[in-house]
Length: 198
Ligand code: URA
View 1 (cartoon, helix red, strand yellow):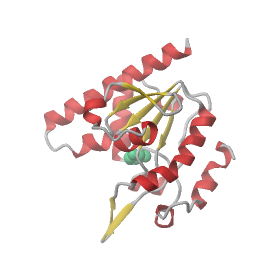
View 2: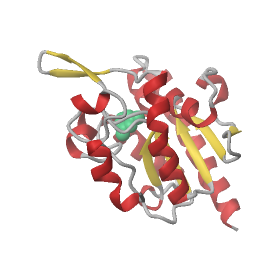
View 3: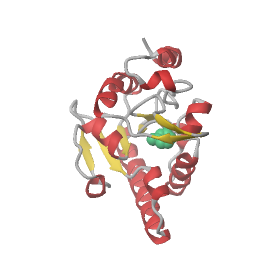
View 4: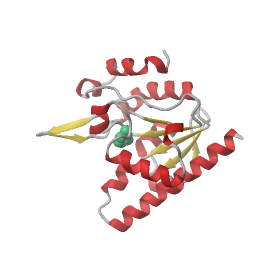
């Protein structure tokens, strides 16, 4: 099974219960020769409806930070640790719910497949779920951000903030500072990926 069959396989995936509630599976997207693989948590409401990663409000923050950092999204592979949207229905709203450790572990099968197929020079983990899925460590993301860690199979992964974390900050100064940190980390990712390719 390769990336060509990923979408239908994800749509049909029932390895964990999340898939039964979501509209569809959301595979990663980007070129096969991407030097960078950016990993988020799971699709949100907009991504679940559209079927593409990071197209909603968190995606807007990511796109803005990527642009400021000189990161070409279309040359990167952008994906999530979990491929279905987990939510709680509240009236007409669908409220994001964090996936459990079991759900993240089960879904790592798909992430590992994407990693094997793309074989990026550098991974970027945006937020605690991606960082945990890739490194096995649940340590505080605010302390780890900006650092390169190693996955259990020896790949390099740069840890950074999740765009949704930035969106949730209510203080404007804190929000600007966090977005600047995400931008700095993405700029570093571009530099490191370039050095690896040289
Ligand atoms: N948050 C994520 O982690 N991934 C998306 O694709 C959208 C929002």
